[in-house]
Image (tube, rainbow, N blue to C red; front, side, top):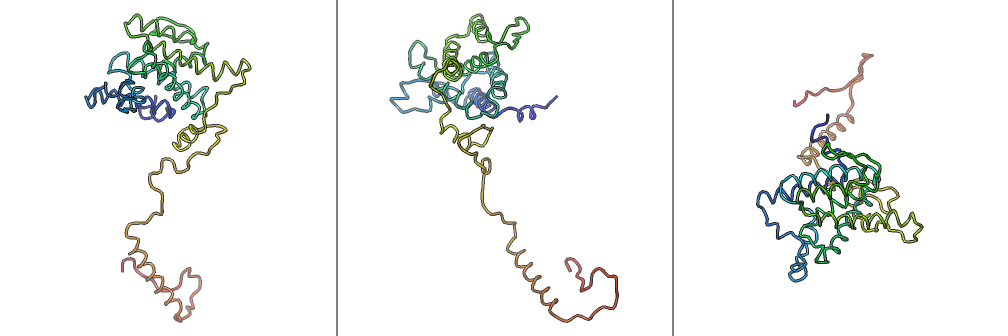
Length: 281
């Protein structure tokens, strides 16, 4: 059995980054380092006070530490990782684009007052679950060891559980809408013979290439070879000037010794002939 560190290192980059970001956001909230109202999705301050960070930060808050938070984090670790290792294997840029498109779609949907919710991260996680259910429709899922069903029905089962437990179901429904929109544009429409091709934009490929994590087959840009390197430049050993001076002096001394005539030794079979020097002498 692998250790927690080995399991963490084995996770694919996109799901790992998003999961850790959500965990750190909730941890900072638990430590009372910020007020959750300052990172929520509120279009009033966004347009009036230019608090544009709200358009991004609301996707990283999955609620305070609780059972629903743990379930959502497990969804990322299970279904998000399964997608990244399955249909999106060696397609890191496409997977990042799925997140970006999903977030943008949720922001547009949330502009309708009826669908608005202060934290759309829950909807983004539910979008991941919905896309997974369409990619793995025949996979067997066991819910709490009680109900076994096909993967295609997983989003509806989770929706029913949130309804039973008294959790808000609006984020789940909005996430399913965004997930179906993405799946329709990327899979269903092309299969139906549609001419519109929903491709990952070039700027997303450039971001992933600069990030240097994951792989993308047939990428239009090459990955950054210096990704992950903090400093580029020539390296110098500490005390290099003194060492160079000493080395130069020893080399000059050796040249002077080589130029002076030495008496020819009559002994044979000796591997080395010349003056000897004791180290640190």
